Length: 118
Image (tube, rainbow, N blue to C red; front, side, top):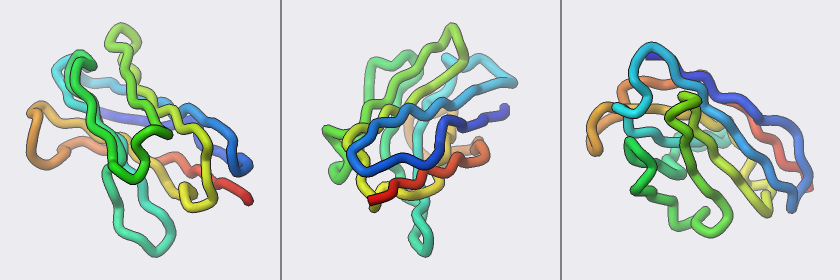
């Protein structure tokens, strides 16, 4: 299984951005998918996840209302839309997957850097 996050870049405070996570090496619909982020000097944190067919989602309380996770199993791609971006959203964003609906995430992609300027 391989994952590749993309879509990061330099944006201004208040902007929106949509990140993509491309999946390969298996049946995407068999995998629960999550987005994590790691800000400079901070621990990695989970920001959202989505069930195999997209029927269930979870969001970090801190980001709820500003982010939306989705997936298109036909395209083997998951997305993270972020609105009203703030400088404190600056981080490397990663996608990860697992077969189960609980437990550790087994497969990780390289991150994509999001930088929000004030």
